[in-house]
Length: 90
Image 1 (cartoon, rainbow, N blue to C red):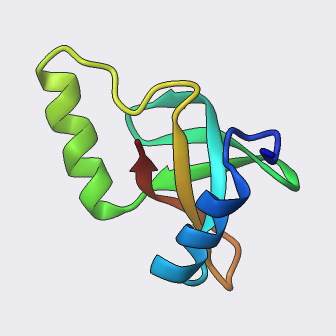
Image 2 (cartoon, rainbow, N blue to C red):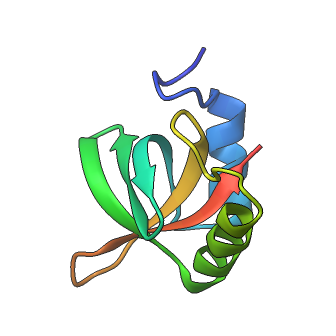
């Protein structure tokens, strides 16, 4: 069974085990600095974490769009409000 975001229950459990505090999501739209991500609570704007910003810039300079709409991502919701994409899940 999946959660409507493309994550199965075992995958959600694995995310919780490997990266406590991160939440599952799926990219709806994206640009070089962030994405609109669908979560179980609805759509939210998220920026990329520092390491992903570098990877996104490298991909775009090579002519690739990454991440892209439809990609599953792990999100961090910070206590002061912002949300960051911490990783793209294959």
